[in-house]
Length: 379
Image 1 (cartoon, one colour):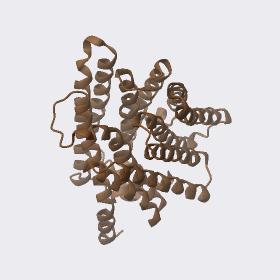
Image 2 (cartoon, rainbow, N blue to C red):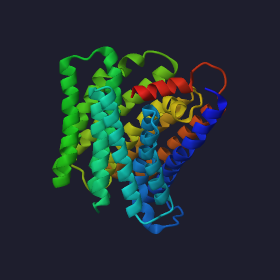
Image 3 (cartoon, rainbow, N blue to C red):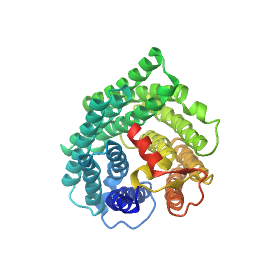
Image 4 (cartoon, rainbow, N blue to C red):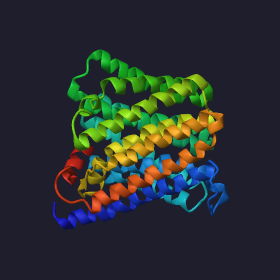
């Protein structure tokens, strides 16, 4: 590809990605305030925006942008544009209704993207990711109707877990899964979706059912994901596998806590469930796939570096510290310090990614834009 088209694509996509990253940074700031750190807060009522910024502003924009790139059709960019616009409104403390509607619109376009993908090539993994997108749409629509964030969280969890699980199932095709293996996967996905639906009627039973599906899915991923094989390789391939396998452990723990406690309201146990899943699992998946996602989205090469293990190790150590503070009363202060280290891990990740994109040299461990686009379209 010549430099001019690449520059135009970068200029078009970079603002959306920048707003997603800004959502991450401000969402982390609000998260520190929520656990007790005394930091400046321009708008006192904005603490509630922590979750929406992280899930819809950051992850929603990142996922929809990746899907739009993979689709290769201009209309698909309506999804990340709407999500980024909603993030921008949250960042400037606009009234809540417009961001909620924009995030709902983004999810609706994402559902259409998966419907188009299914028409092109019907597959189980695409259908599961489509169900995940539908869960995000249902949750955002529920939020837009006036539901509290706590009532919406099960839908957001289903969205992220099913999206990631669908991606991993796609790669599992290389192992030619048996019918029993596929039934296991579909059962886990169905229970996750059912848990989100039941939570709409009764939050605690829905949370427990969601947790059961999550544990079943985590067990499937730990047993059947190709990462079990690729972890024995070297370089980027091994790094990605380590991220994935560590994330599955946190997913299982978060689901297990949800089953035992039915944690569905604010408190330290609820904090443990959410951050085991959203940080330990989801962010570990982001770390794993960033070397593929960024070249695909930005159209620029990215070099893998062994130093990536620094932000990965800090992430998992910080989640462990945070959960120790949640469950061990004498260590309650660890919850705040764990949150601070969560932020440090994410900032280190951003710094390492930017350095690898703009300062990386040589050819070893480089993911080219074409490779990233191929991976994105495959999803």
